[in-house]
Length: 520
Ligand code: N0T
Image (cartoon, rainbow, N blue to C red):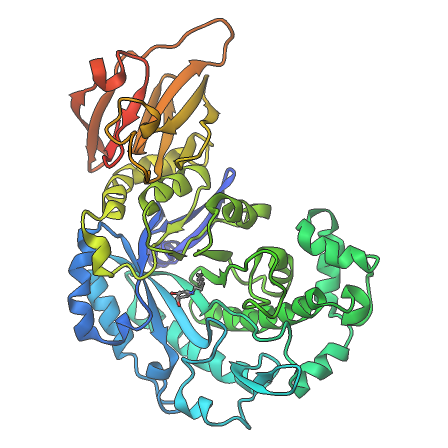
């Protein structure tokens, strides 16, 4: 009995996703975990020596997780001979710096291309054929239609997962990304011989039954493609989805998704960590084929959900403007927001607060986090330092719907939200005429999150915002009994200054100045 209990505990402490209330949480060692992350530049983790100067920077930025690639070409330089040195080094150094890892499987595909395939794959086009454009020109992209391509990629991926299972009893690796920004170029689908043969086939029953089952929940962009042809429940790809670039892309997405699903199923059978795929977002108005097509994009989420049910999440990489627009699209249907990449730019600090507060996001992570020019003052580090402190609060109150987030750009209107018995309104701090930043030409975004812990008790965490509140009950006013700033020491609130007078505008608002970071 004793042994069984121990075994069960070890099992249950594997990192995993759980749906709690209306949010999904990532549990690490049984506790809600929020990835305060950064993704390494692509080549950075290929040298353990190079990494030595990187770790202290990451530590200084208060990351709790590093998102780092595993390179197929370096892991299997000769077919069937595996070298896990780099992976083991990463694990050792992450532990030394008390950090977790999300590993990126740079396998068959990386930003559409197959540049991380080992030389023995790249040079054997016969065994490992490529996708072809509509003129029959092969591209440097392994075709998903060739079973041998799946076989070798899967073999390597399974070996990686087996290895992690063997060496990572302490769960340093908490999630795995399968491939990177899968996408088809320069045409919407491949025209290699196997692809052309598949294109003539009937649409697979698995997709058709998903369409029927989810008819009412399909994302509108995808439903439109299907309904344009009369929402058919059987037929060839052209019969069901029509003759268009959009239809070609659906076909291609299906085959990428089922390939990735096979990889994911096999990987999880070896070691069941949460797994996701990421997408290079398309620019609206650009036709399929002209952007990396057929990946887990908003208009193809249904195809990916139907074809790759083993994946836990579809994740957006943010290089486009309009953070909220894309986040809204990616949280449809309960898909948790997991941000493996965000351009490392001004405002990521504010967005991190907003993403965790508003979207119940599981991971936030600027890309090329080790870039040294961004280190000066490292706003993201200041945000992470506070987010780390409020993690237990976030984990506890998020499932109950007691957390809100705000993002305020220069041109944002005031944001209002209700929480508990109050309506809260947030504005950028520079909207206050007397704010030191009010006259600046450029306003760094402000952002924050608000947590209700009792009927009349709230925590505000953020930067560059001012919040007012009024009771929902008509004809009443609300005032502040007290506003304290402070910090958490191992989950215990330690108050600092009492903020009153000018600091809370004589009891009219709660405020964090632009460029400052605080918990109140
Ligand atoms: C990302 C990164 C890395 C002007 C780009 C973004 C990473 C990959 N791709 O640095 O390559 O591995 O996932 C593609 C979107 C770029 C849009 C640029 C718009």
